[in-house]
Image (cartoon, rainbow, N blue to C red; front, top):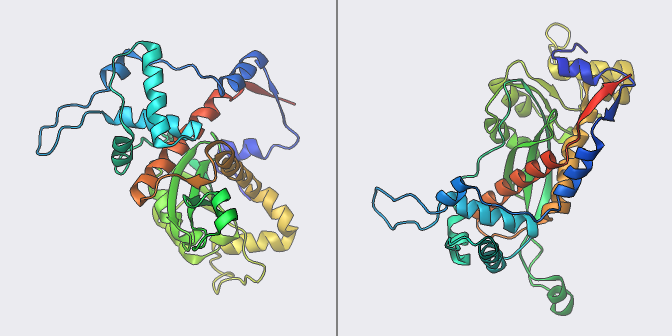
Amino acid sequence: MPFKTNRDRRHHIPKQRHRVTNWAAYDAGLRARGSLTVWFTAEAIEAWKAEPRTGRGGQPRYSSLAIATALTLRAVFRLALRQTEGLIDSILRLLGLSLAVPDHSTLSRRGEALEVPRSKVGSEPVHLLVDSTGLRLCGAGEWLEEKHGTKRRRSWRKLHLATDADTGHIVASALTDKDADDGSQVGPLLDQVHGPVASFTGDGAFDRDDVYAAVAARHPDADVVVPPRSSAVPSGAAGTAPTRRDGHMRVIAERGRMGWQKASGYNWRALVEADVSRWKRVIGDGLRFRTDGRQATEVAIAADVLNRMLELGRPEYVRIS
């Protein structure tokens, strides 16, 4: 399979090893993930209060920065809204700052339409890795279910993630109903990536014509690395104008599925599976908000938290033979 970028060549060099060159910085970065050091810059203190509103309506007291800061701490420490209010209050008192503390009802209400900045991608084409997982909704506690049972089935929603294979950052996310299939979210995920896409890699659930069409409509030159089903048959034009799917089937017939995975770079999809695992271990396996808008904000903040934590523990390394 031809290589289109330097990244493709780099990732296909056999038997390459990496050596960390600055173990002290690497170790310090890992410890920094658990650091409780909190500081407020002068710009953050100045921007804590909301700007005066020029149009009609009530005057907001807190800026979006203040609300996002509180909800970020809530996601990191897995707190309820009232506990988040208490944490912010204690931090401000310890720092000696005379800033007002958003109450729990304000945090809930402002979380409905809060705009959270997305992780920016560079100018180089992005190699997207996609996967999905389930997040349970708030409901009866485990003790309550065990003692009294529950009258309704456990409800949950589906989280779709797109990861940049080069940086490991979550660059796009979507939250849908549990009945939504993975392929239907390809378009919404791609629309969140503001930049060129070099490849789109997903599991067998994305082996659909509309997935190939959605990628081709937005990024005509992007590769679609999706394993065809075991019962897949070539298209009618496979002999004269083979599609990308026909090319995958040909390589599988020649080298087998394991050979195709290695040649196509499909095994790099494990990176997005690692992001799903990090989400469950750091953020949790559930959603604390109850409305769609607030849950979308909760997911966007959680993705930003994981991206920041990834940067804190990233080592410095060089390639050796």
